[in-house]
View (cartoon, rainbow, N blue to C red):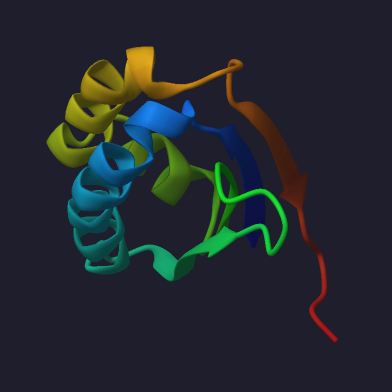
Length: 97
């Protein structure tokens, strides 16, 4: 299994636009065969900070996801919505407790 944490800091004036468009990414990503979970969480204190938590069956599922239209289109649209570049951490998981 592969777990991904994507830390996203959105510009305040782009927050609503981000939230409107990210829903399509979430819905389509959850429908992918190799996806186990795909959730967006908002910071309780800073409403422009989010973390996307993803679980994938394997690395092949991640590679497939990264080439989908919904992922690449969102990345192109959202490029100018971030206050800082997204920070992504990826973990290869051998066991889930």
